Amino acid sequence: MKLWKTILAAAALALATGASAFAARTDLVIGIPLEPPHLDPTAGAAAAIDEVLYANVFEGLTRIGQNGEVLPDLAESWTISDDGKVYVFKLHTGVKFHDGTDFNADDVKFSLDRARADNSVNAQKGLFAAIDKVEVVDSATVKVTLKNPQGSFLYNMGWGDAVIVAPETAGTNKEKPIGTGPFKFQSWAKGSSITLVKSDNYWGTPVSLDKAEFRIVPDAAAAVPALLSGDVQAFPFFDPDSVAQAQGDPRFKVVIGATEGETILAINNKKPPFDKLQVRQAISFALDRKAIIDGASAGLGVPIGSHMSPANKDYVDLTGLYPHNVDKAKELLKEAGLENGFKATLKLPPPSYARLGGEIIASQLRDVGIDLEIIPVEWAQWLDQVFTKKDYDLTIVSHTEPNDIDIYSRKDYYFNYDNPAFDKIIAELNLTSDEAKRKTLLGEAQKILADDAVVGFLYELPKVGVWDAKLQGLWENAPIQANDLTKVKWTD
Image (cartoon, rainbow, N blue to C red):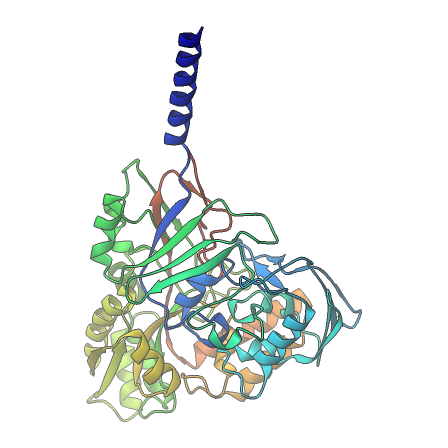
């Protein structure tokens, strides 16, 4: 009898051991190309910040879903007044920040007032410009009164720049982010990786992953061996030129989706000779989008003629306004008094779309007499020199923020563009909630930007994701700049 019991016990142990051996993994290493400058989404423009922290560590009143829809988040529901100016948000209760302190309406008021303050360092301060006042009704209710109706207000509150932070920790979020999300910050090995771990006191549906490491892999050539070796299991934003090495391999999924990344040749509109319309139009005619797309995005980018994603329902196709035409470009330069051409600089940030695209564009502009000196810069330099100080002639960048055509109306923005007619349309758009009217206004705005050749509109950045075939829950598309891990899990 004792022998039989011993055999049964051994069999049970073997079964248990076998079951644990085949249990689904709960850790994940994600490759990202760029290291964030810091970890506070409310104090920086770099997309890399949100790509690590959005929905994972920090949450807002609302959130943007993978199809671009507005979803409840820390606000479980809301009501809107008949005049469209008063929003009353009912907040989830029992929510705690990762340091154990309670989340309540005071934190919402603090966050929104901080974002719209005169001394705000929020990179998207315009998102909050319509707010007149924020009032705490009770610990679970916030009343937000707008100066005027704003059709995009709930969407705006879902941006990474609008996440809710606590007054006690807001000042240290750049190095030690404290949010309310399903993951909490564990460590940041500068230049190497950022690690998040599952939050044990999360108020919502628990995540499946216990640990997620965001591995910084700036070299596209290094991404392939990292993936093939299993050292990194997912690259949500993979180099398009390297996709062929993963396609056809049953170990991986290759998923090609859409982004909100308008890839542009940005132009300093107030710096001579770019302050002349003919010069900017000449540049647009000199650009061969197909060659740029083939060379910089493996042919996967979608051409654009203004600042809106072709996936957007309000997109207007203006790509035919500036067909590739070298003779027309030279003619316009002659009209501008520059028939002998001129020299300029092209500052290129690290992404391959910029570095590869820059070489191609420099060659194309050389054909019409514009001689570009290529200056590679790191992201910190780009943010300082180009984005902040406007110290540049031309640059290439993908604007991955959603529905951001209004950036061309900002007087301190790095394009240095100023058109009262455009500004008037954006002002009217901000007051309009009627979808048909908004569509008309957005069409007019796109046309003005194209006519003014404010920048060289190139293509919509494709989202090329490659990850382990046993992973599920990663986003196919990128309606916002995020790597949302809330639904990610391993399958057996």
